[in-house]
Length: 84
Image (cartoon, rainbow, N blue to C red; front, side, top):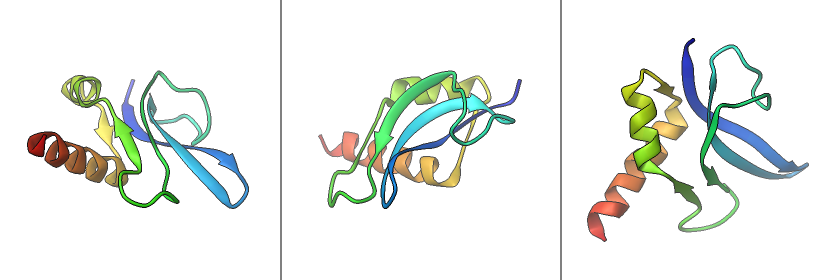
């Protein structure tokens, strides 16, 4: 099974909210997922996401490919963790 780490859209019309999930590559965008790793709210200014880097790194170690946006969020989370 090819796993990917990507955003799953939730929320209402004109008010998007995303969950960062691990899912099968063939699954629909809002379909079933294996595990939830965090959240992302693009309408909030500043610190608008949470992600469990330990779980994300474990999934990447197992071969899961993060999407471009999730890879950027992981990069920002690493920078934020290094500052703290």
